[in-house]
Amino acid sequence: MYRVVTPETESELNAYYQLRWELLRKPFNLPLGSERDEYDSVALHRMMLDPDGRPIAVGRLFVGGDEAQIRFMGLLPEYRGQGLGARMVEDLEALARSEKVKRLVMNARQEAVEFYRKCGFLEVGEGPVSFGRIPHRQMIKSLAPLQTIQYRPEWCQDLATRWSRGIPISEKMGMQITHYDGHSFHLGANLAANLNVHDTMFAGSIYSQCVLAGWGLIWLQLKELGLLGDTVLAEGSIRYYRPVKASPEARVAREGMPAALLPLRNNESARFQLSVQLYSGGKLAAEFTGKYVVQPPKKR
Ligand SMILES: CC(C)(COP(=O)(O)OP(=O)(O)OC[C@H]1O[C@@H](n2cnc3c(N)ncnc32)[C@H](O)[C@@H]1OP(=O)(O)O)[C@@H](O)C(=O)NCCC(=O)NCCS
Image (cartoon, rainbow, N blue to C red; front, side):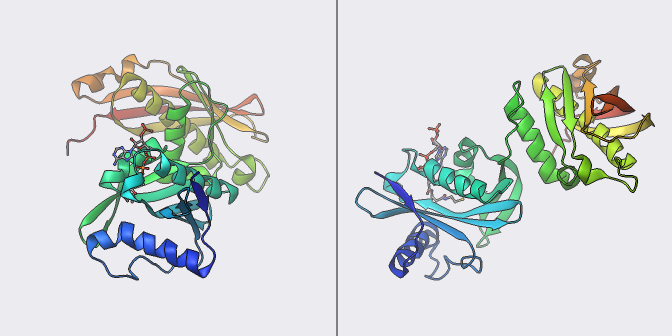
């Protein structure tokens, strides 16, 4: 039986760092010692043992607030290709969940990107170049799954992950996708995180929640059509009908889409209007009208 253990004793830790060096530094002719960094003393370490108790894989988790980073993951070549690498990631993920982490992040070497994708990570951009020659891709996996979403849950999860990375304030506002059925999209927010001096929801937060709901629906509709595009808000107006005192939820229906998005097929921008309703505890509290423009992706 293969087991994942925490190296604790001096000899276990020596074996752990030795294997880390052999797998991840020796192939680049880097000296012993180069396999360690200043976070090792505060990070969490895992090592996999084969049925004879021989160390065969290592991995490290560093927890920092809402995020945890996986680093120094490696498995002996003769054990690869039988699901053991994925088991190491699962173990590190379980560890992160037990630390109440919201997101796992990591920088993957190009040849490991597909492996991490299979483990549920999303590629979000360029990472660092190690030793001046090994480029990495930044990858991220959200650990707060959208259990209530039945239709396209994985797309909604992708969207939530992109928002938490690209628009950090959406996370501070407690934005959460609550519904998507291919036609309409609902986005909730945490009232407590958006209060004004009157203990009701801040008008600017209501506006942001509506804008983001419209943007989110467009992103999902683009995916439904297999199209790519960059969405911006060109014009927006809002009417506030009543103070928001409970469970703010923005609701938007696809209206003119998908037809409105079709100009993108001819490499032309799509322009259209969306109306977003903001409900407070189920009562209509605000109505936002936005003119969105979706531009074809820029040629690189
Ligand atoms: C990356 C690594 C840990 C993967 O371990 P592994 O045990 O071979 O991976 P698994 O067998 O668990 O693979 C899980 C899935 O990923 C896929 N996968 C694994 N490595 C892959 C690769 N290099 N390219 C494409 N797919 C890969 C597998 O086919 C499998 O897919 P499936 O679920 O559809 O069957 C291992 O190859 C390794 O240690 N590499 C060298 C060190 C390294 O690159 N570490 C990462 C640093 S960023």
